[in-house]
Figure 1: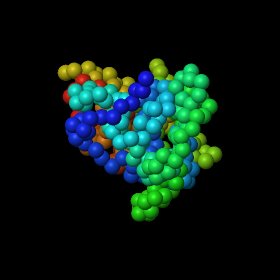
Figure 2 (figure 1 turned 45 degrees about the vertical axis):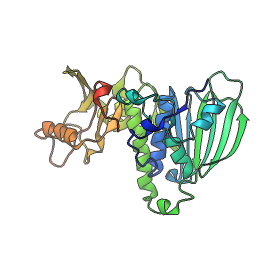
Figure 3 (figure 1 turned 90 degrees about the vertical axis):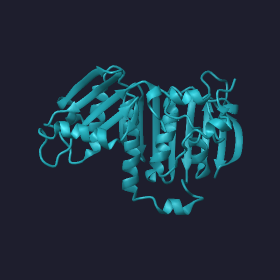
Figure 4 (figure 1 turned 180 degrees about the vertical axis):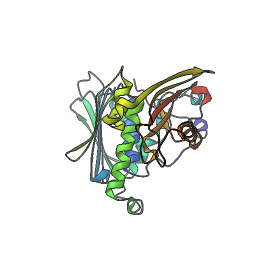
Length: 299
């Protein structure tokens, strides 16, 4: 039975839609989030030319049957939201059903997928949002999505991409944020022959994952946080003043495992440490805030 379904119009109108595909890192983020929502325990991302020419995400999640694989290409078709009440209990990364059709519309996409234990899989080729081919394939117990020639049909968008080095940093950062939020999942990111992220699953040791992102040299300086008050839990690790960075890039904050960049929260962390940090240096931390999903506007 298909899991994916089309959302009703009244629910679509309640969802704040945004620009999904801004750069290669947007594609990486959306596809990896889909893999996490599919229950993957291992996710591999391979990119070429900083994502301009190809992005390939392979996972061992639940996979899709033929009908679901075709439905996921339709706008506002999703398995993650049933009705308006569900907007107040979002626990998945995605819920709008916009990412796949948005990415497919500005690229050449190939989907190979199969449900676990299935005798065969499905392969779909999409060119600029148009399904060009649907065929059976060998089962892979998961999903592989290959996105090629990003923005080939909207050259103005491609023109405004930054230098390859800049786009590559954004792709790596997208994977690092999701790797921090999900230490139970193994992540690998490669760019050509270079391995940029190689994080084994660390179910019981979040410190190990944080050190993998901040750098092994940070590990000895990490102090654990664990505070529960007023229905809120704050946990994670923060580095002592002996380990600092020149920028705020090492400050990661999450709400219910979603990465957020909140000026007030980051300012509070910096002010709490300002008397202890060397001049011009920034703190390094990964802080996880858990609250009732009904108190968060995921839009």
